[in-house]
Length: 109
Image (cartoon, rainbow, N blue to C red; front, side, top):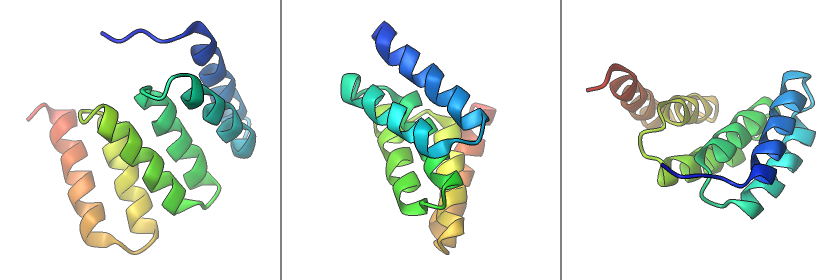
């Protein structure tokens, strides 16, 4: 089990709060600081992907989800959300593959 820096977790919580209030750009800034401190934190990259997706920055969202998946290939939410971002940019075949992978992970197969 990997442990993370307290300051990183604080930044991620700040980002979550900002995102929940709809301030996704500010959340991304918090997350950039968090991943600078802990570049192996899959949750930070996954949340950054979510925020970028809300901002319409689908390619950046996909890149963030890719980072989360590279660190944790079993991150089902990152796979699913990457699939949705891929669908948003018309990359439907890849989207279907990512969503299928997320379902496989969610179901434990």
